Figure 1 (cartoon, helix red, strand yellow):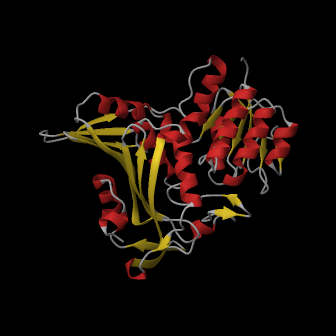
Figure 2 (cartoon, helix red, strand yellow):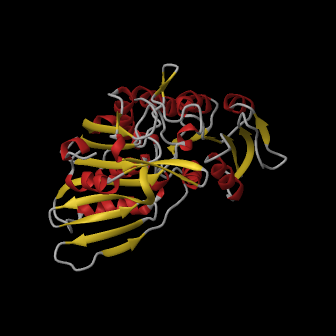
Figure 3 (cartoon, one colour):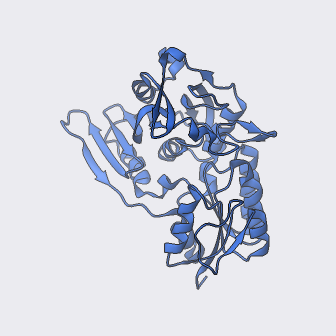
Length: 368
């Protein structure tokens, strides 16, 4: 394909604005339309503005539809865009169920159009490099893969949208909890390093979900996932830490361990007997630019829908499983900062790190 790619962006406020800026800054793209019930924001006068995504997709001929819309709308809008001949950049989490995952894959194949998922961390060459380092044997045999996330989110964050903090709305799966949305990249990156892609790559899920906030979903959680082939992924994730720390994927081996800071694209190799780790930095490509390259020359996508099935299997299990357990109020501190109210959990930083290092849930460790 030659010429500029005609792009429409649905959902242009909040995180969606970053997609608008990326299109406007890209040499390959023309922003021909945006859609948002709150208005189009600051866009060129030539850009058509719609109140809803479906109308934009129906009325404008698009090469790429960027969907940064509420989670329950993803499957329907992506299938509509594919049927109209557009490739899709679909924000994470991509779909709320394994059935939707398979249905969207089928729609993508039938339309001969691609679906790229907005797990930005998968755009880094560091993901494959970490997997290759493990395979090289430099840290011995794999013990397990871990993931650690320690962020801080206010009570207002859980009221940012009608679907925020919910598992289900009007019978539709949502899954806006810490594991499946704010720190979903930790799980997706750990799976990519461990080689888990399809829903069937997940054998079992032990999810121990907790919450300090008055929400329907989880804000402080641990899970241990058994994968086909015997590997395990253990994640300790919380948005109830006192302050934000860089999240990472831990790869434990029998002769050392790896720490991949996926927001910084850096890998630290800790070898038994070595006084200091070796550190490596990697390049990252935007997923929109990667999708453009796929459209123009057929190169493989870095974050295609088919590589996110294992993540969706976990999301579905969390949304349909037991609800999150309230954390002991004695461990929860309520503090005001910058006009917002934060609930932080005492000891959560050590707890999530122990989950990743030991490969056990809070429940098994007797924590929180």
